[in-house]
Image (cartoon, rainbow, N blue to C red):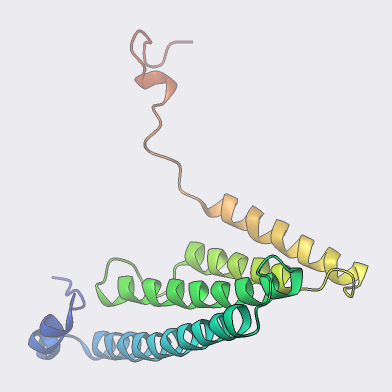
Length: 168
C-alpha cells in the first residue's frame, strides 16, 4: 500500500511515523522551501508596497511614465513568480503532484522571461539579446505545447450525436 504525504501540518505530525525515510525527507524539504519562499514573498510584497508608495505618492511620479511602470510591474511580476513557486510546493506537500512538474517549471520560466522583457530597456538592448529572448520564449512555448495534456473537455468527433464511432 502506497503512503501519501500529509495534506496539512496536523496530518504531517500525525503521519510522521508512518512515512518512509525518503517521504519524510521530501515532506520536510517541501515544507522548508515553502516557508523560505513565503518569507521571500512577504519581503518582496513589503518592498513593493513601500516602493509604490514612495514612488507614486511621495515623489508624485506618473505611473504611466515608462520607467516607473517598468519598475513597478517588474516588482509585481517577481512577487507573482514567487507565489507560483510556493503554490507548486503546496501541491507537493499535499501529494497532489510529484516533486517535479515539467509543465509548471516551463510556465514559471516563461513568466521569468516575460518579466525580463518587461523590465528591459529596449533601446539599450542588443539585437542579439532581443533575439535570444525571443528564441527562448519560442523554445519554452514549443516545449510546453509538446508536453501539454489534451483538453478532455472538448468532445471528439466520434462523441458527437449523429456520428458513428469508427465510420469512415
